[in-house]
Length: 440
Image 1 (cartoon, rainbow, N blue to C red):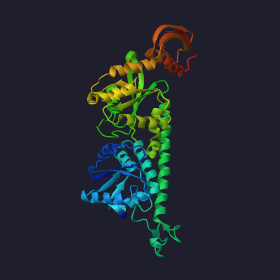
Image 2 (image 1 turned 90 degrees about the vertical axis):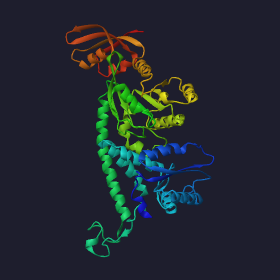
Image 3 (image 1 turned 60 degrees about the vertical axis):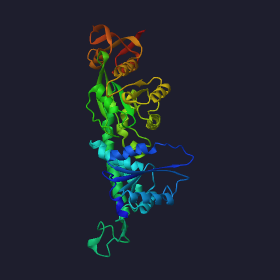
Image 4 (image 1 turned 180 degrees about the horizontal axis):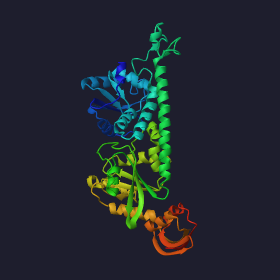
């Protein structure tokens, strides 16, 4: 039975899905709906669903021996290759369940990691997923593979058979210890490589200091990439699957009056996103951390939309974005069948904008709201800077209405009208003086 752990992917495998909830705790009747979408995204063929309430979490099998034996019967009946739990299981629980059901057992976190592994395209994303997988696997190495036996240092006394050769002789080293050492070294190396990428990413973000930065955040498959394409023509990959893209893309978005902002699309969130992934994708999530405005895109057609919004807000709090300026965007209203659900959403999120990124419905209203946030109330300013300070002059040309311009020696004084919220952006270019002379 040990060999069932050698292959962790679920592509094309026949899967039985399991969701267990402890009585008395908050219970979602649609627990298996999202797990089904995750499993299908990973490529599994769903053959059965097993939803149970349990009195307590059993330390050995999570669901208890009796229910585990019931599960084994269903695995046999449907000839399943894998059992996928919506719950997070301990390594011991996975091992015991595999003994009982006779096939591979994965938990929710492992399934999500598998999906991320298939979706990673860039070197950064691949490194991030590798790190998350190894950190998840490290404490689960014990008895995961059949070769984890104690090996004599000299393999029975023959030098040729020594594991690792010189320096490994004596009482012997367990293959488990060797694997842990190798995994530990690989984790260290991945962290070193990602640290270098993180530094470059942070320098990249710092180089955008003169721009207003908007970041799309939201539950996976809420339509963020479709909205990104609709607003900027970025050509971001779009697919009706969870985690269709893992890589952050940033594009210039030109608004009314030639005002330019930077719009970034980020990896989607999901309920109980594994902490290893949140940590590994730190550089990717920096886009949200450093944004001036977050567009929270929610799928208004999803019956579980309120829970999805809460999940995203919880993750944003975790990465330090809870207090950021946010605008709620209710997407997919063109396919919404439950009018009462939309009414409830608009009652709770009164400032939300209802759109369809696919058809373009109300994108003009969204753009207008963003412009208002970007500008704020109009103010008239007098700016003095060096005539060679092209950044100040270019910023005012692109974002302000220039009323007057006077040159004296090597300096230029410009009188212009712009939005109050843009003053902080203008100050980043270090003009000699910036004076507000009139408020609207």
